[in-house]
Length: 301
Image (cartoon, rainbow, N blue to C red):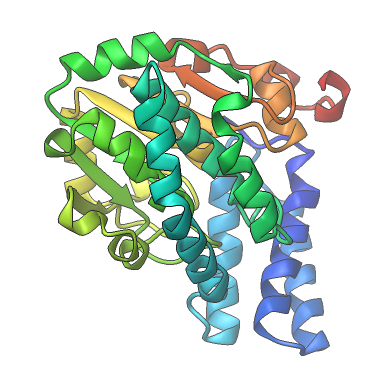
């Protein structure tokens, strides 16, 4: 998925939010804003949105020396999700189709995205998780079940901290012995890293690797050779979150994308309503709207 013009204000907002988390220095706030504006002026719109976010957060790290400005929030949402996990596991086990229920939980947990909603509260996240199975979801969950039953090697691409704790429910349904869990190579926004996988207890359950990249998505040519080889060999790839959808929706692989539609650009691009819980397979994801990239995304929502 390429950058839409409507993405540019969001890049600016994300940059300002991140730098304000790190420092009260107004001069640094102004510097970051000006640098993002210069970046936007020469932006290659054929890149995926996470490529810009990666550039912004690398620059923030350079200027401030702070590698993980969202660490406190990541820990907070990891604790919240861990406290709710037994309750949510009971819901999954009592559901008539446990894999579908676990997938719905995993999608609901995608609300824990501080790049889209920096002021997300624990009460909002808790409510979203408790209501996960009562919310309408778009997608062919039976096909995911069928593909999972046939797969020998499953690659599970995690998204955010907190969310990764809830991913455990779907991983348990998929069969942990067949799953390799992938996290980001370095901190970016509140995306999950190996530290978050450890906090979720997933390193004892499945093989966990990082992708070698600090992009808030999966830009294959920026990832490690080990990750790319596992990606190539996987029978089934489960990709969580909008960032993974933005970077992989045009890739030829057996992909299932699980995310909540959290911004008008994604709603416009997919043709699905804002706020919907979504499971898209590769064929559905390839129905893209790049020809409309110069039109206002909000016009189609």
